[in-house]
Image 1 (tube, rainbow, N blue to C red):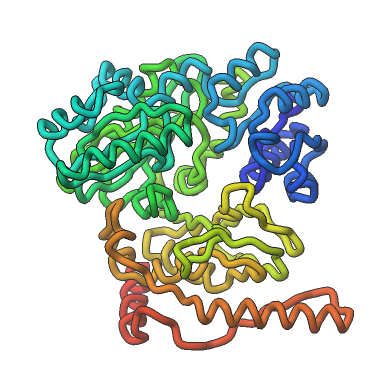
Image 2: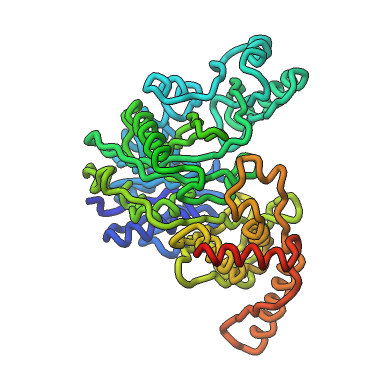
Length: 502
């Protein structure tokens, strides 16, 4: 077993990995930039090393500096978490060359699945269903001709990227040429590669992904599905497991295809195969994420499998402790990403000092957070500051618990996505599970921003008064008020309907 692991990340995911290591008796090493000198992951790790100034390309993306720290600290392995270097094949190869275990897939597997076109060709050879599309590297004229054959609408997609960068949805032939130019510019800026390709746009699609685990002994299993259709600009905001559109037959068919895709590249570690599911229940390969996912907690809650600990065991050369027959999904889990963004101002990033914080607790609630009172939230890194996960015996109970937890959640000093999530869970179509990947383009959940602003102001004033009186604790009260968006009688009816399902 590893004696010491370096976590090449920050925030809530660094804390998540540190805790998993502590529960295995493994010492941990944190790395931090100037901006994170007082971060929680620095405090919780056994050792911590400074690696540079705040910009990620001068700190958390410095693979050479991180490997130097691993050598200096005597770390056996490096866990990259997600983001930063997690899907960097060159970094995984550099770890291997340095004699430090990379807790993740091989560089070859990362490379094969990291390029979308290569990934499509690889999984197609394994019999994985693909969305109709073109190869990469075609000229604009060739892409214009191909679009006529594929049929509109089409997606222009960057070959080297992700996260919605270099992506354009095109409905009309006259829009394609300008969309290709814009996508190429964006892809070149984001990834240093302006190669694009076309893919048929699947209307009314759901984004459903399959979690897989694979060891170095040829064993590959799946842990069921996650529904990730609530997105904004191709960024996931809410995830749940299982999915309301996946029955046991579809789950097994998608799981078998995901396992085949992993085996096609000799995959080892945790990974996720993402699919689009159309209105008729047909599913198509989208991409494979060769890392731990932000939304992994919902799978852990419904299967009882600790994915982070399994990654560590697999990297240590051990066989999977489970067979496919051991995996059973029980209950329902929903995750809301809590971000430092202003939902009432087009989700613009929000910065400042957190002056008061109260995180929800109680049955079925899991919080993964990287913030504390007095912490400065800046613009250098991803705005996600915490994840709120609710678990219930069924979807109705999970929604009610999520709603209850959101009403308890208080973060003062910065704007957050909490009001957006409160509005979302009160939306009838969300409660009924009637949504697709374009849901937020056509449905705007009410944002209870006025109430939240009053609560934040009240919290700040209370904190200042209590500080002046020399008291140590800050209590944020729950005030009343009219909720916006959904009328009181209709909200009561919806909630009563959910209660009857519990």
